[in-house]
Amino acid sequence: MNFSELHDEMRSVAADLLAKDTVDWPLLIQAGWVGLDVPDHLGGAGATFAEVAVICEEIGRAAARTAYLGGAVLGIGALLALEPNEFRDELLADAVEGRQRVTLALPGETADEPFELATTRLGWRVHGQATFVSDAVGAQRLLLPARDSDGVAVIVDVTADAVGLTVADQPVLDASRSLATVSAHGVEVDHAAVWRFDGDPDTRLRELGERAALAVACDSLGVAQAMLDTTVSYVGVRRQFGRPIGSFQAVKHACADMLVRISVARQLVTAAVADSDSTAISMAKSYACDTAVDVAGKAMQLHGGIGYTWESGVHVYLKRAALNRSLFGSPAAHRARLAQRYR
Image (cartoon, rainbow, N blue to C red; front, side, top):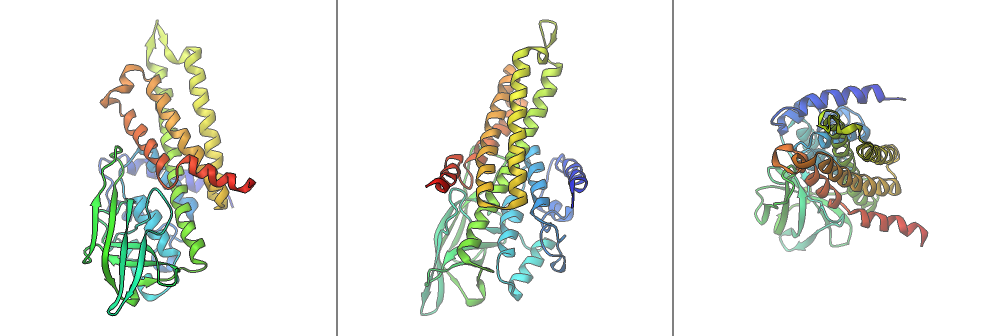
């Protein structure tokens, strides 16, 4: 079934909403974006990741500072990957309704589980640390990827104010993203807070990292498209030697190169969203994020002197593209994964 008309309508609505000065969490809840791929019996829209990808691209196009990556893509995604139980279902419904904001403490530089679940005489304790965690500051519940005493991957549910848990803001150059360091120093948990994956634990955990990587690729695609649109508009009105600079052959070729790269990136991202295949995701993540950095850099050059000023806003997109390139696997790391197929 072709959902292109639905997606076009979603893009139009998203563009209007993201044009607001402040896009806070209650606004995302009200728009229904947080529960897009949550089953309708739990309060969600019953859609798929394809619809989530549309929102991720539009957020990147607007370079909006939201908690969507950590709260919806990762937090909701982690809950959906778990075995159904009354506690998980209750938290999922609360997250969709906005009563709780959840995030997955998945480190932004790797997809490994950074926490350990140790058995003591009094119960279980969690130890470990995750860095570059998306949107952890302000979340009421944190889901910690951990290994239990048997080496099985699990998710541990803890409250943000749990004794021994610290969430520290981690400043980065890109001001449009919120990242944090999450540390657990002997956090006590009971049996009800340790949740099993629905299916093979290692596969499910890897898929969460891939879900995050694909969401960032969609964001980078939006960044690149915004920079191309802005640049084409600028070179059409900026005049030099009595005519628009967009009429110069060198500028035409530069814009054409940007368009070609974005077109290839869009095809790769679309294929990855449709297939959810590890290889397709690595191809999309590596190419789309590299493309966004290159296109934003070229946009800055084509804007001339004003492109290097604080007022132009081009720097916001360039910084976002640069951070996206590093989050959840650099292009080099994903290309190394692709190379494994030939060994």
